[in-house]
Image (cartoon, rainbow, N blue to C red; front, side, top):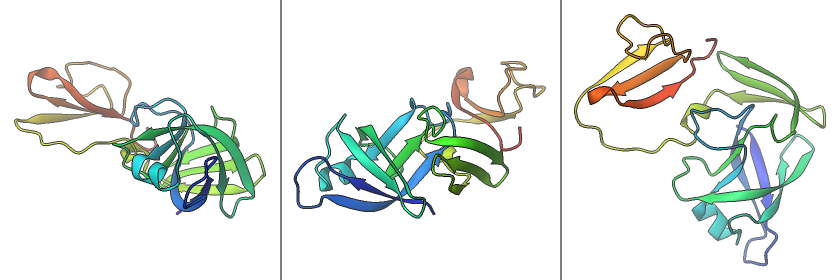
Length: 169
Protein backbone atom coordinates (compact mmCIF):
# COMPACT_ATOMS: atom_id res chain seq x y z
CA UNK A 1 0.00 0.00 0.00
CA UNK A 2 1.13 3.52 -0.76
CA UNK A 3 1.73 5.72 2.30
CA UNK A 4 1.86 9.48 2.68
CA UNK A 5 2.76 11.91 5.43
CA UNK A 6 0.57 14.96 5.90
CA UNK A 7 2.10 18.02 7.54
CA UNK A 8 -0.36 20.33 9.28
CA UNK A 9 0.05 24.08 8.79
CA UNK A 10 -1.57 24.67 12.20
CA UNK A 11 -0.22 24.11 15.67
CA UNK A 12 -1.66 21.06 17.34
CA UNK A 13 -0.79 18.00 19.38
CA UNK A 14 0.18 16.15 16.18
CA UNK A 15 2.00 18.07 13.46
CA UNK A 16 2.18 15.25 10.92
CA UNK A 17 0.79 11.79 10.40
CA UNK A 18 1.75 8.89 8.11
CA UNK A 19 -1.30 7.25 6.55
CA UNK A 20 -2.33 4.99 3.70
CA UNK A 21 -3.25 7.06 0.66
CA UNK A 22 -5.41 6.17 -2.32
CA UNK A 23 -4.21 7.82 -5.51
CA UNK A 24 -6.19 7.82 -8.74
CA UNK A 25 -4.50 8.56 -12.06
CA UNK A 26 -7.32 10.71 -13.41
CA UNK A 27 -10.61 12.12 -12.22
CA UNK A 28 -13.14 9.29 -12.28
CA UNK A 29 -16.87 9.77 -12.10
CA UNK A 30 -17.08 6.58 -10.01
CA UNK A 31 -15.52 8.53 -7.13
CA UNK A 32 -17.84 11.49 -7.75
CA UNK A 33 -15.37 14.21 -6.71
CA UNK A 34 -13.28 16.83 -8.50
CA UNK A 35 -9.50 16.57 -8.65
CA UNK A 36 -7.84 17.31 -5.35
CA UNK A 37 -6.79 16.01 -1.95
CA UNK A 38 -9.52 14.77 0.38
CA UNK A 39 -9.00 13.91 4.05
CA UNK A 40 -11.39 12.11 6.36
CA UNK A 41 -12.76 14.40 9.10
CA UNK A 42 -11.35 12.30 11.97
CA UNK A 43 -7.83 12.57 10.49
CA UNK A 44 -8.21 16.31 9.90
CA UNK A 45 -9.34 16.83 13.49
CA UNK A 46 -6.40 14.83 14.87
CA UNK A 47 -3.80 16.92 13.00
CA UNK A 48 -5.71 20.22 13.27
CA UNK A 49 -6.37 20.64 9.54
CA UNK A 50 -9.40 22.59 8.42
CA UNK A 51 -11.32 22.73 5.15
CA UNK A 52 -9.23 24.42 2.43
CA UNK A 53 -6.04 24.51 4.50
CA UNK A 54 -2.93 24.21 2.35
CA UNK A 55 -0.99 21.20 3.60
CA UNK A 56 2.28 19.61 2.56
CA UNK A 57 2.04 15.96 1.56
CA UNK A 58 4.94 13.58 1.11
CA UNK A 59 4.51 10.30 -0.78
CA UNK A 60 6.67 8.06 1.39
CA UNK A 61 9.37 6.12 -0.39
CA UNK A 62 8.95 8.22 -3.55
CA UNK A 63 10.93 11.38 -2.72
CA UNK A 64 7.85 13.34 -3.79
CA UNK A 65 6.40 16.30 -1.86
CA UNK A 66 3.67 18.67 -2.90
CA UNK A 67 1.36 21.29 -1.43
CA UNK A 68 -2.38 21.22 -1.92
CA UNK A 69 -5.55 22.61 -0.43
CA UNK A 70 -7.52 19.86 1.23
CA UNK A 71 -11.21 19.14 1.39
CA UNK A 72 -12.27 17.61 4.70
CA UNK A 73 -15.07 15.06 4.36
CA UNK A 74 -17.01 13.07 6.93
CA UNK A 75 -18.26 10.42 4.49
CA UNK A 76 -14.95 9.56 2.79
CA UNK A 77 -14.14 5.83 2.82
CA UNK A 78 -10.39 6.51 2.69
CA UNK A 79 -8.23 8.32 5.23
CA UNK A 80 -6.55 10.28 2.43
CA UNK A 81 -7.53 10.40 -1.25
CA UNK A 82 -5.41 12.07 -3.93
CA UNK A 83 -7.95 12.16 -6.72
CA UNK A 84 -6.42 12.85 -10.12
CA UNK A 85 -2.62 12.66 -10.19
CA UNK A 86 -2.56 13.91 -13.82
CA UNK A 87 -4.91 16.89 -13.42
CA UNK A 88 -2.97 17.85 -10.28
CA UNK A 89 0.30 17.56 -12.28
CA UNK A 90 1.80 15.07 -9.86
CA UNK A 91 2.39 12.40 -12.50
CA UNK A 92 4.19 12.52 -15.85
CA UNK A 93 3.14 9.08 -17.12
CA UNK A 94 0.43 6.59 -16.32
CA UNK A 95 -0.81 3.20 -17.36
CA UNK A 96 -4.02 1.45 -16.31
CA UNK A 97 -4.32 -2.31 -16.21
CA UNK A 98 -6.57 -5.03 -14.87
CA UNK A 99 -4.73 -5.09 -11.52
CA UNK A 100 -4.49 -1.34 -11.02
CA UNK A 101 -2.46 1.59 -12.26
CA UNK A 102 1.19 2.45 -12.62
CA UNK A 103 2.19 6.11 -12.48
CA UNK A 104 5.49 7.90 -12.84
CA UNK A 105 5.75 10.84 -10.45
CA UNK A 106 7.60 14.08 -11.24
CA UNK A 107 10.58 12.72 -9.28
CA UNK A 108 10.80 9.77 -11.69
CA UNK A 109 9.68 7.27 -9.04
CA UNK A 110 7.17 4.70 -10.31
CA UNK A 111 4.22 3.81 -8.07
CA UNK A 112 2.10 0.70 -8.41
CA UNK A 113 -1.47 1.55 -7.38
CA UNK A 114 -3.87 -1.32 -6.65
CA UNK A 115 -7.23 -1.14 -8.41
CA UNK A 116 -9.51 0.20 -5.68
CA UNK A 117 -10.43 3.72 -6.74
CA UNK A 118 -14.03 2.79 -7.44
CA UNK A 119 -14.61 2.39 -3.69
CA UNK A 120 -12.95 5.61 -2.50
CA UNK A 121 -16.04 7.81 -2.34
CA UNK A 122 -18.67 5.13 -1.83
CA UNK A 123 -21.18 5.36 1.01
CA UNK A 124 -22.96 2.38 2.50
CA UNK A 125 -26.74 2.42 2.40
CA UNK A 126 -29.61 0.00 2.78
CA UNK A 127 -31.35 -0.87 -0.46
CA UNK A 128 -34.79 -2.37 -0.60
CA UNK A 129 -36.38 -3.60 -3.79
CA UNK A 130 -34.53 -4.93 -6.78
CA UNK A 131 -31.75 -3.80 -9.09
CA UNK A 132 -30.44 -4.81 -12.51
CA UNK A 133 -26.74 -4.89 -13.40
CA UNK A 134 -26.05 -3.95 -17.04
CA UNK A 135 -22.58 -4.40 -18.51
CA UNK A 136 -20.82 -2.39 -21.24
CA UNK A 137 -23.64 0.08 -21.84
CA UNK A 138 -24.93 -1.93 -24.78
CA UNK A 139 -26.56 -4.87 -23.03
CA UNK A 140 -29.74 -6.14 -24.64
CA UNK A 141 -31.97 -5.11 -21.73
CA UNK A 142 -30.20 -1.83 -20.93
CA UNK A 143 -32.84 0.88 -21.29
CA UNK A 144 -30.05 3.46 -21.65
CA UNK A 145 -28.80 1.80 -24.85
CA UNK A 146 -25.14 2.07 -25.88
CA UNK A 147 -24.24 4.70 -23.31
CA UNK A 148 -20.50 3.99 -23.36
CA UNK A 149 -19.88 3.02 -19.73
CA UNK A 150 -18.54 -0.25 -18.33
CA UNK A 151 -21.46 -1.09 -16.06
CA UNK A 152 -24.60 0.41 -14.64
CA UNK A 153 -26.78 -0.72 -11.72
CA UNK A 154 -30.37 0.38 -12.23
CA UNK A 155 -32.87 0.28 -9.36
CA UNK A 156 -36.64 0.00 -9.34
CA UNK A 157 -38.21 2.62 -11.58
CA UNK A 158 -35.14 2.84 -13.85
CA UNK A 159 -33.09 5.10 -11.55
CA UNK A 160 -29.31 4.76 -12.05
CA UNK A 161 -27.71 3.81 -8.74
CA UNK A 162 -24.09 3.26 -9.82
CA UNK A 163 -22.12 3.67 -13.04
CA UNK A 164 -18.51 2.74 -13.49
CA UNK A 165 -15.79 1.49 -15.75
CA UNK A 166 -14.51 -2.06 -15.79
CA UNK A 167 -10.74 -2.54 -15.93
CA UNK A 168 -9.69 -3.10 -19.53
CA UNK A 169 -12.98 -1.69 -20.91
